[in-house]
Image (cartoon, rainbow, N blue to C red; front, side, top):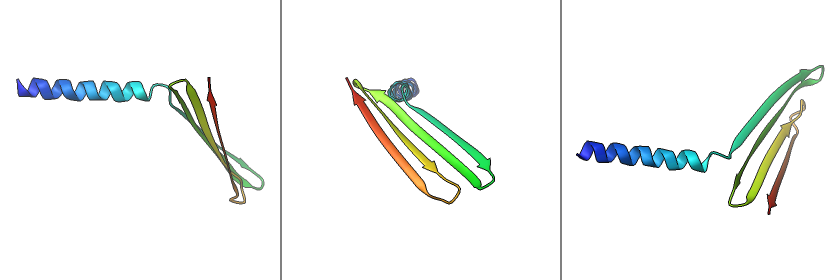
Length: 73
């Protein structure tokens, strides 16, 4: 009986965690050119009527540019 209860508790917790992250996303890319390699990473998600994103770009010289934004309805 205890094993069944613990298994049910773990499954329920994982289900809630998966539902919370259902609207989250991540993207990344890398490009190489004659001046070196550049990369971009973007993350975002929506919850409670609000969506946000964060984008970080790194150029071939190592310069980093970060941009964030949030939209609420």
